[in-house]
Length: 100
View 1: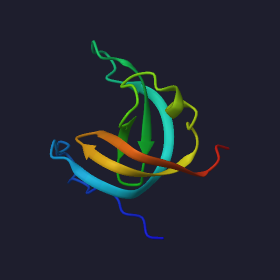
View 2 (view 1 turned 180 degrees about the vertical axis):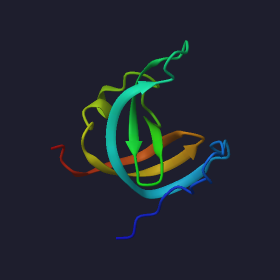
View 3 (view 1 turned 90 degrees about the vertical axis):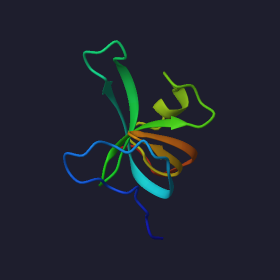
């Protein structure tokens, strides 16, 4: 099955705020600091793909401290959803391979 990636931007450009639908976007789920040094600083769950790193959110999940997403840290997953700037709002998250 082919993997479609979110469109990449040229190096040095800013992420687009234009929503982009993605299908079968694959990557590894990771957790780490976000917005370091700002009032919004917190640990976030990310989807790390070959092309980019996105803050990962479930469409119907909480914006912060989503325990369902935290359980997927270390897993490779496939997602459908919408990318807005640096955030992937996922309609579907399917685990592909287990955390090692």
